Image (tube, rainbow, N blue to C red; front, top):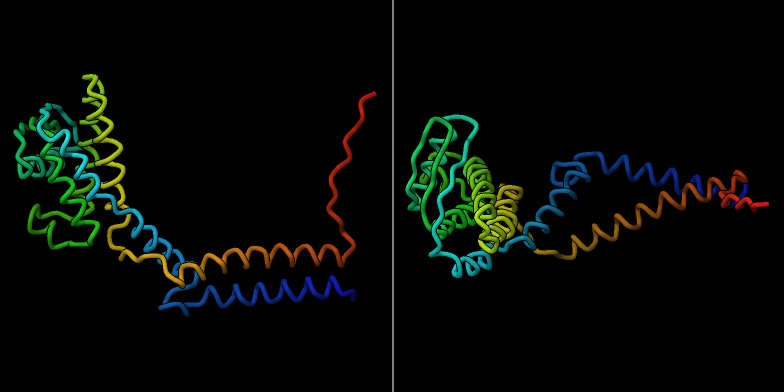
Amino acid sequence: MNRSLTLGLLLTVSFFAVLAYMVTPSFDGENFLAYADLKFNQYAKASSYFIPDVKIGLEEYKDREFTFTVEMKNSEEAEKTTLLYEKAGAMVSVDNAKVTISGSMALLYSALEDADAAFNNDAAYFTEKYGISARETLYLWYTSLNVLAKQLEKEHRFEESLYVKNQVITRAIEPAYNFYGIEASPMDILGAGLLVFYVVYTLWWGFAIYYVFEGLGIKLTKAKEKKEV
């Protein structure tokens, strides 16, 4: 057996030995992939907290009025949406699944406060305020505010529309919903180590294949270009 094939087989065997260990629940009771995924979500959450900046941006628009109608999936969702906006200080009327809302942009402070509470995993806040879960609350805000953004766009109020869509929804509601239940953690030496490991482990497999092929006399070469006559 030549040197390249021996090295390739050693790299292959060791690669799968490490993989076998990675699928065991040896990482805080989880396998390595689940553990690493959680850690990266924690790092991502820590770098996705923009709510204070979004609140500052609302100062410019808070006194501007609007009226829009959102059609929810059913009357139950409509009632819950009504509760959200009434607590925020809006005038609301309901017709089955349709909810008509009138108020000022200042009521978006309530949506941002809810997003902040969800970002901090404060389940009790939502139970006391609305009697529903954090994710359901954020879903109702997300659904209704998307309709508000479209209504403002139809009225050629593009600045307000973009603020609702790109700031309140994208930078506050969505991260709070997606990362709910995850504890934020700033990038640390463990995170850096995980990134280095992923790079090394990928190269590990690449070199294993390369040396096995080389040892077997299999070479990957670029096909020659055909010359036109």
